[in-house]
Image (cartoon, rainbow, N blue to C red; front, top):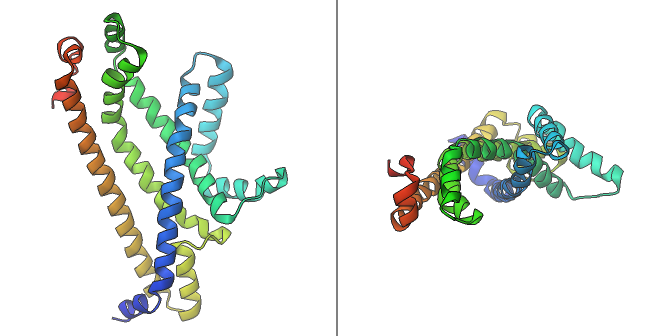
Length: 238
């Protein structure tokens, strides 16, 4: 009961932190996905001048703790003359950190598509865009969406670390409440419940998107005579 009363008493502060957590997390995830595309393309390139720097950056980001990436962005960029607000530094750090993981997912998904299917599609005269849309892309989504969902939830939880640079998100709000009430257990029970709700909602949303994408892939194949007749994409018929 005391925990419930605490939540009601400080709900405006918690709600503001919750909304900011959603905002910075979704912005960081979206930017990470965008940045992952050229990063994955460069790592997949046959040119060493593209492949090696991209591979090195991906490994460096994946092997560094998120808090280190956050400090490099927030305290390192001002040394280069680039000054950002704390929440902007947080979004950029989430985007950089997540892009390395999303790039690996994109590469794994792309390489999971048998090369013979791409060659068969090209031999039929399909354009590069058509090959990507009808053959490669749908199979990449089927392979890549489940791990991408895990990474998205990881970034949502990592957004709690933004409290160390005074971004007033959910964890920062919790620390303020704890400092006022000295009720560590109650405040963090509330916060854990709110993060659980956020992670469950995000996972459910992405899960529905995965199901919708699977249905669209099946519909695409049903409506494509070329794909239905020649490409034999058995995974789409499951």
